[in-house]
Image (cartoon, rainbow, N blue to C red; front, top):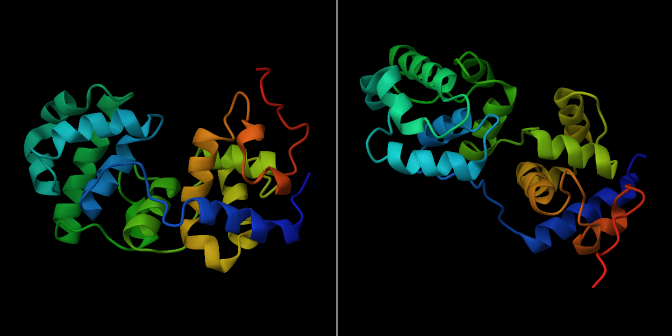
Length: 216
């Protein structure tokens, strides 16, 4: 069931009041570190990525330094992350392109970002939003679930949900919306069983039946 348009404003106002300045849970200190962390985070947890990058970034945190490690050397730092061999290849190739075509800088255009190996639409959206402050919607499994379950944005593909969200989220909330939705999906509107009795936005959500509080 679709969320009533009139309910969208209080839904986001409530999320904002609870967390006025939401941040990504990935740890980074430069645009390149953010790009590398997001690339490594596909089908992995932010916690797992942070553990690996805490070892990697003090040693190599620029495209040229990661290139110098080579695929095998990089693999040693990230082998605790799922699919690490593929990710090492992608990150090395991405670093090569950044050095050869972009002067070692992360480009600001979607087209240039999506041309990097291992960087899809979701990763590009995260970098454009978090690093450059653009109003984009990076639809991961959490946002896909929350969009469909709440009735805020229903769709059968991440792109369909993204397009719905870009239309329906009020402009004032767009820049931070994907953070609020990810965090909400991660900690409250969880996959197996949403914690409806703890949810601050349950009043505006179209999900039925709401999960009752567990018996004391």
